[in-house]
Length: 117
Figure 1 (spheres, rainbow, N blue to C red):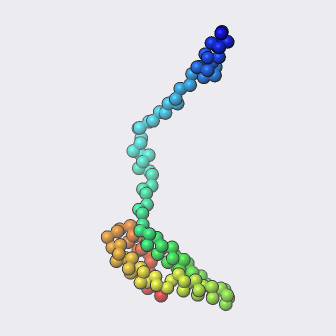
Figure 2 (figure 1 turned 180 degrees about the vertical axis):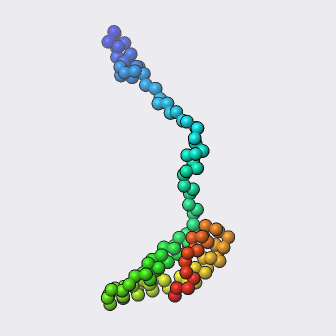
Figure 3 (figure 1 turned 60 degrees about the vertical axis):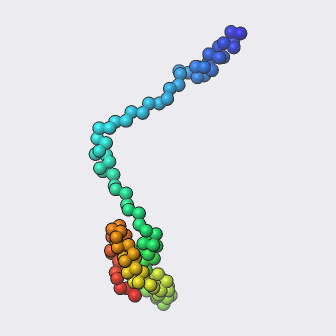
């Protein structure tokens, strides 16, 4: 009987160790404003069609800047530019019209040349 009481006491006390407590978290609020001021502001979410255009046009612009080092490279660049550059002038105009009231979209499209084809 005495052994049962000892086992029960050990189980109730957390296996013989000190009673467990939830950890306490101390939150200091002084200087909180200074910490949040230094965080970068989140980037605006761009419309999917603007994101898709930028991916395609960035690849086009990259290929346009490459120098062919031989006939095979020239053929590769020509194919790549036909695939990624064709239609982007009209697409850029359409996107600028469609998103004329979206400052983030207009800013994302601002650096692209209007006429590359």
